[in-house]
Image 1 (cartoon, rainbow, N blue to C red):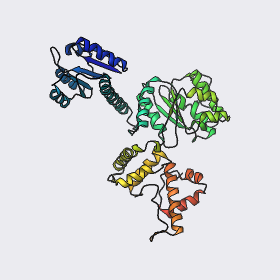
Image 2: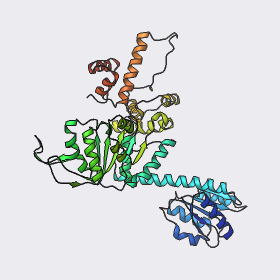
Image 3: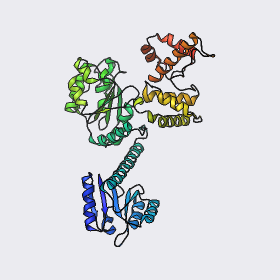
Length: 443
């Protein structure tokens, strides 16, 4: 944390500097606006504290220069007795806050810390916007909850470091979103290469990862570059890494240690330089204790670990997420963005959303398309009321709700939903037709 202090009274300048330094700030102190002018920079990541009345150019003159340089660079004005009206004018002119003399240390530190937090968020948003401009396909990390703000700061701090990362989170919490953000905010110019380890058959896994030379096996008519080599200079994202066959875990570990590989059927060692971001919904350390995942690989990829919060741990973000997803879907489908009541939003915020953000996104898209008109879970019905549903009707409603939520949780994949629900795929298709449910995928 940094601060520029402009105060012409030497004793007060020294005391204020010491207060800020005790509060964790690195301080550059100046006796006049002219002296401080050379330290002003639009990229300055700290706070400016200045007295209003200064010899030569005033604090208001300095404020005008700061606002012209960067209107979002926070400047706190220090005013003497009787200067409050002037301070109000300074606020209108763009000052972040003002403090009246004499002031206590806590009053000063509270204002400066709030200003520093604001400045950090502004610069973070600018960095992410710049990164998104370079990588327009990178999704946004939407939310303002404490959990998401901490995650944004962690992404900002860890992205340039270049260390390999393990992301842990439940299905639908945004593991690939975070991986793409880290890649975009890093200095890496190469490709972002994503592999779902759970979706690749073991028979082709090694060829996909390492590539092969012509003639390496039947059907290998020409050389093929593997995913590891294609990610050179960029980021390799290994989703569901717990599904990687043990034999290939050994080979991957060797590549990570030596930073070179050999294609299948080849003898040449090829140098590679990529960052690994692995993702898992399982506890890899527990799997390693059971002999189902290599412990040495776990420690190699987990130099840094990121734990993603479930949606029910960030319920305050649901309104923002719904607004974001429905606006996006309305634009893509050429539909009007739907409106909802406060009661509906309360129900959505109270729902469990086992599929997390992915389930919420799917629900938002269905809302835009008019496929659903009520939140999940469905409202309870009083079984003793005059208009109570019959038992078969209640069972049908409950079954429909279970199927709908399961489809949301697995991104509309009927095969996966049938497997997790423990019913044959044909049975599930029959029920989809019965309940007029539309899956996103039919695989």
